[in-house]
Amino acid sequence: MCREGQTRIPKAYVIADPQFKGDKTALEIKQSRREDEDTMTRKLRRGRLSSTFSKIERLRLPDGEYDALVKKEWQEKVEQMIADAKAKKGEARIATAKFDRSLGNDKSSPLIVS
Image 1 (tube, helix red, strand yellow):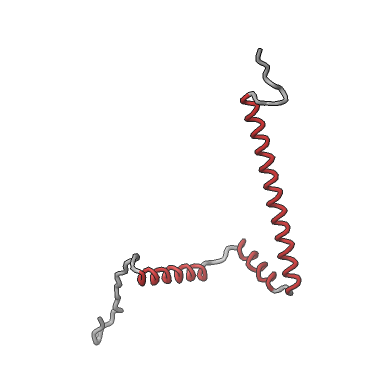
Image 2: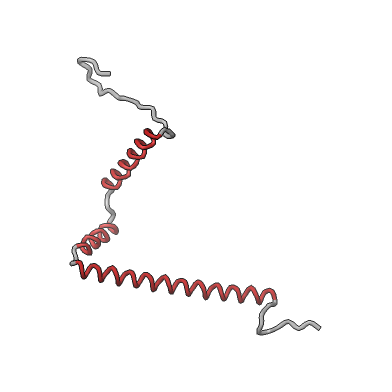
C-alpha cells in the first residue's frame, strides 16, 4: 500500500454491504457523522441568528422564570389548538349543512311530495 519514497497519498476502498449487520451499523454511524458535520458547518442566516440567540437567552433565565415561560407558551399553544379544532368543527358543520341542502335534506324547508 505504501512504498518507500512514495509521494502520493494512498487510498483504500472498502466494499460494504448495507444488508450486512456490521456494515449497516458502520454506514449509519458514517451518515450520522456527516449530518452532524453539515449542521456544524452550515452558515447561519440572518433570520435564524436572532432565533438562536433568543433561545440562548431563554436558557439563561432562572429556573422559576423559565418554567413559568414554558408553561405560559404551552397554555397558549393548547388554547390555539382548541380554537383551531373548534374552527374546523364549525367548517365541517357548514359543509354538512350545504351538502344536505344540495340533496334536499334541509329540515328547515322540507320537501313536500303529493
